[in-house]
Image 1 (spheres, rainbow, N blue to C red):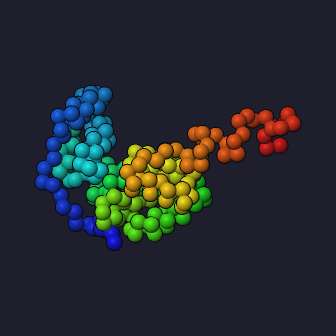
Image 2 (image 1 turned 180 degrees about the horizontal axis):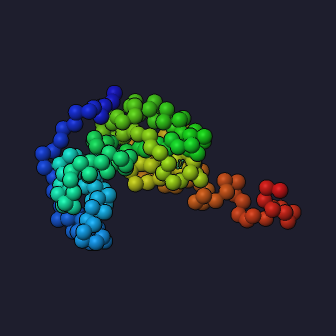
Image 3 (image 1 turned 90 degrees about the horizontal axis):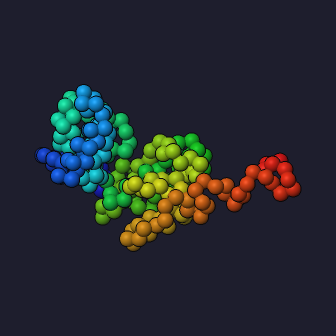
Length: 207
Ligand code: FES
C-alpha cells in the first residue's frame, strides 16, 4: 500500500526560520553583495526544506522571497526547476535514482523497478509508513561509479538491484550502511583492482 503524493498537499499556513537557521541564512546572504541578495536563494531554500522535514511548503518559499526581497514567483521558479527541491512531503529516506545515460546503460531502470517492487510504490510516491519515497533524477555527477542513487544526502554507487535492496533493508533496520561504492572499490579506482597504468610485462594498460 502506498500514499500517493497527490496534487493536493496540506500546506502549513506560516513558516519562519528557527533562530539557528536564521543565523545561517544571514551568513549565506552575507556571501553576496547587498544588492544581490537573490543570489542566496538556493542556500535559503535548502535550509527551509531541511527545517520543514524534507519538502518546501509554499509558506516557506514565500518567507524566503520576503527575506531576499524577491517576487515570490522568482522563488517558485527556482524551487520548481531543481529536482533537489521537493514540493510535496517525502519519506524519511528519499531515494533519487539517477537515470541519465551512463547510469541507464549500467542498469538504472532495473534499480527503479526493484525499488517499486520492494517498496510497493511508484515514482513520486511515499510508502504508507512514511519511510521511503522514490523519484528519478538526472545526472548526479557520480557517473564513474554508475549506476548510483542518492538517498537523502548520501550517494550509493556501483549498484545492482540486490545491492540496493541491501542498502534499503539496512536503512529500514535503523542502520547506517556504508556510502559510496557498494562493491568495495576505493572511490572510483579501477573495478578490476589495477593500481597503475603499467600492465604486466612493461606495456601500457589496455595494450
Ligand atoms: S549519469 Fe548517473 S551519476 Fe552521472
